[in-house]
Image 1 (cartoon, protein in one colour):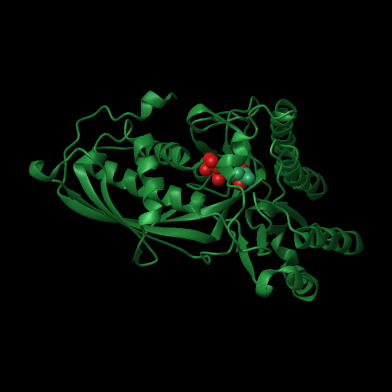
Image 2: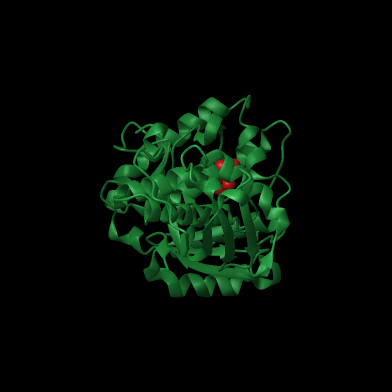
Length: 362
Ligand code: DP6
């Protein structure tokens, strides 16, 4: 498919007003997206577990403008957790501008958008994946109302395509449990334009994988992902890194089928550390890990060595640590977390999540 496939071709029958609500999850990448080309095209393919408990719920009310009040501008109000938020508006305007040619009906409507997250606002958990995917799904529901016969496949692909234009990782939040985004030779259908459900066999162990998120630092990050991605332009290790991610994704194919957790852990932990190694070797360089991030990582390694329980960590672009493990070890791991790791979390806070199957219309 090409971007032009997402420009509506059929007649649009405008409807007066309506309302739609979507709940869309966050996701955690196993192979990381870090570096992009023009128009939100990833420099390398990535794959993520879709999460379940960490999600955004977004309601979009729409009202057809009358000709007199139509100034040819985007017209919307945005409320976050019940309060009108002017400071979120520029992000949404940018999103609408990026998707306008694919959603030419946007300026014909006035919108009221209400959004909230299931996770605390200041938890250091990025809300762009869940928030942007929920908004993209709301826009698609409007499109479905005004244009006839959108197939479910087209709906999901275009929702992911639009979400990507809002935030790259959001393209992987529409479906689950495993979503690939970015072309990869060995993965049929994998596209730079949208996230696709991982098409091959997945061992049962991964279908109920747990992700317990240790909230090491709830503050705002000093360097945003968008700035970090840009620092991959001219980065001395960029090409090797993009190749490494591509190779790691390919290596995951037999591992995801066999459920070989030893090999799974090697790739997932290496990806997390490679991501942060890119940050540390950018110009300017920066470090998003905190001392407690490293304390937790070392504790996990010691615990794994001692118990042989296949538990591992991954990191986002931040200090929080995602602890990944099969659900049959849940009791042991939670005991370990409570005994040894909560001291490294801000106010002892952590979030229990698990693999999920994607966004839901409410
Ligand atoms: C480290 O999707 O937040 O979480 O496209 O600029 O919005 P933008 O970036 P974003 O980057 C996420 C980076 C990551 C890795 C990943 O999720 O693959």
